[in-house]
Length: 426
Image 1 (cartoon, rainbow, N blue to C red):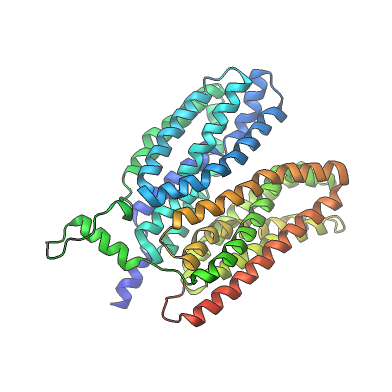
Image 2 (spheres, rainbow, N blue to C red):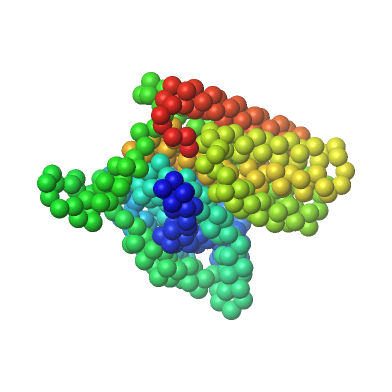
């Protein structure tokens, strides 16, 4: 019996893979395209790149306000209606962006796109899997992050190819159609949220919906923490996740500037950037294979520690000659980035439980997105006014804070496991 349960947990369910495809579309059509389309839009409209990417940053910042509202909606209605509505809104907003002519219209369209992104990206996908699998959601979550880790690998070449025979407006129409024709049907397959399911009637023959309720109740996880211990853990989670998002956002947006200030070539920066993606996928494969034997907080600590190590190695490039130090940075940073997304999904469920998971992750996302949106500005201003040394001091300090918060979360989970030994570790 134990062997069959283990095989069942290891099996990759078709719906999980489909949600991974929809997450790939969510990032590939609503986040990654603007690295390529942003300069195209600026050139075609006669706008500056600073305006286009400034609007993108502001839109990302304001979307932090909607993250908690989306989380509460998932708890109330379930992930399916939120994600179905998100796919429709994504298609509509991309279509609207393809029609804009003015700066004001562009800004409004970008704000709407970021609202739709909150409804179809990782937080909603994690909530859907947590509602379906409860305490067993860790492995399915690793599966969808593994699939969605290829979003830029798929969509950057696709967008570049499309731009070979159509303009940016046509590309946006294609991306809108992908949301409508591929992501929307996938989201419609997600089971209804537990809050929308009726309770089984006593004495009545159980139906399919009753079985879904019983399955959810069997997988439900109340969480490790008592009410008294939840606020400190929430603050530590906020600090750890915000620190990780700050570092990843700063590196992704300023990496070429950092290496240029260090006297390194753009070719080396491109090579290091190409290494980060496969390393995050490799880290997720390892987590998928071994994750059930590693505590959730340890995943978060490894993520924070490898991000910290990567930043320290990159800073050491100020004094160490050669390209190897930058390559090793990319290896470490990629591992940290790959595990960061998984930690964001599994740690809140482990500590706080599966009930109210949407609101909890939405509140954490609000804080994280503020840090993510502020990182490019802080990094660029520090680099411009104080130099490369001060910039690395900023990044190292953020990394140290994130590691300290992650270490404290490890202590909290360890103590809670001792106090509640009957709850399965995860």
